[in-house]
Length: 183
Image (tube, rainbow, N blue to C red; front, side, top):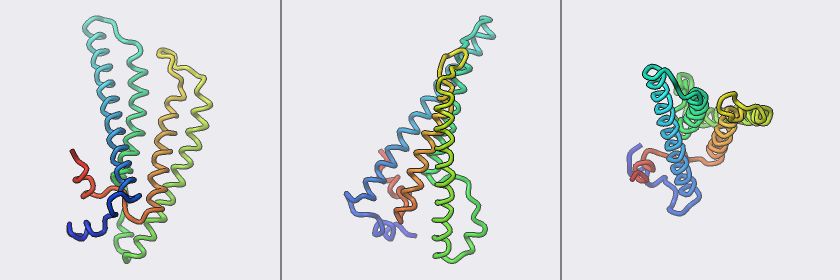
C-alpha cells in the first residue's frame, strides 16, 4: 500500500483510534525503558559480582537473586512489546494462500485464541502470585510471588492489546504512525 493511501485510511485527529495509538506508543516506550533499566542493573550486578569474586574473593550475595528476578521481568515485558509490534512468531504458509476476506476472518480467530491463552496466563499467574507471596527468597527477602507477578502483568497487558485488536478494525500502530510520533 502506498503512503498516500495509508494517510487516507488513518483515523481523524482526536479520535479514539488516535488516542489509543498514542497510548500504545507511550506504553511501549515505558516498557522499553523498564527493560533497559533492568538489563543495565543485571549487567552491573553480575559484572560487580564477577570482579569481586575473582579479584577479591568475595561477592554480592543478593546479585544472583536480583538478576534472576530482573531477567524474568525482562522476558515477560519483552513478550508484551513483541506483541505490540506484531513481531511474535507466526506461520503464514496456509493463510497467505487464502483470499483476503478469509485471511481477515482467520486473523480474528487467531487473535481470539491468543486472547484465551493470555487469559489463562492471567488466571494462573494470579493464583501463583497469591500462593507464593508469603514465601520469601532466602537471600534478598523478596516475595517469590514477584516472579509470578511478571506473568500476571504481562498477561493483563497482552489481553488488553488483543481485545483492542478484536474490537478495532485497524491496527493501533502502523509504521507511518511510528515515524510521526518519533522524536
